Length: 91
Image 1 (tube, rainbow, N blue to C red):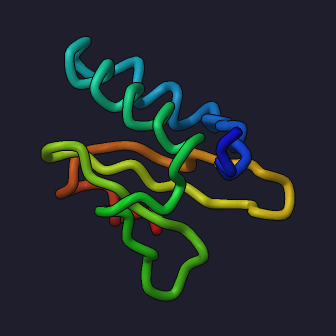
Image 2: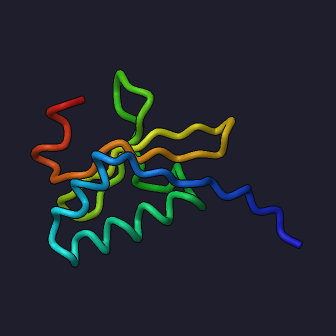
């Protein structure tokens, strides 16, 4: 028996879902794979805590996933996804 940390549940906010749906299929698939991997390792190498926010970001090529980690509820909330030149404008 291994001592694996518990898996988190991942919730994608509706606005982030709409942005994902508008992206090209191959990029969307890569982002979805990365989002799913957050359930096992929410603070994986490459994840950066955003300055002045409680959110984290992780990159997938030129795209970024902004998400919050609720450790007490074992929940990851994907707040936003988008190209790196646009993603930080609304934060």
